[in-house]
Length: 151
Image: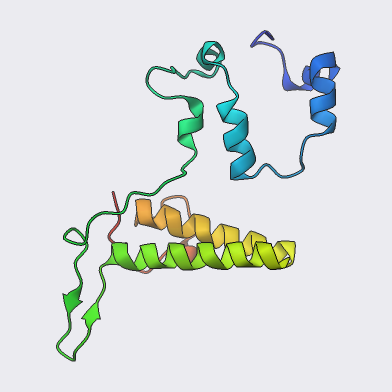
């Protein structure tokens, strides 16, 4: 085990890590991050201020979204006919749509820039689903008014 005080710059000098650093991917995707986090042994969790009893570090990677029942996100009938969907339902539909477009683009070999843009859009939609005020996003990307979200 390495001492916590050691700088990241010295990791390349460690023989056991030299090969891993040479073969490290250029982009760390959510899948790769999840795989790396899952490999953290319970005894090392304290080094990153995590307690396995209360949650392993791999639990911070979102792999599932909570979908509230329709009684929580009802459709609102309109005077002109049809209905207006709740903000949560609309955001869930956008997440599914962007996710499907991202998957399709990856399977069809779309340019990396298009995949990166779809990925960013998916991340923004998931963030808006969780917190409708989108703190930390540039004002140009935020909706004019906060949407109803999980929090």
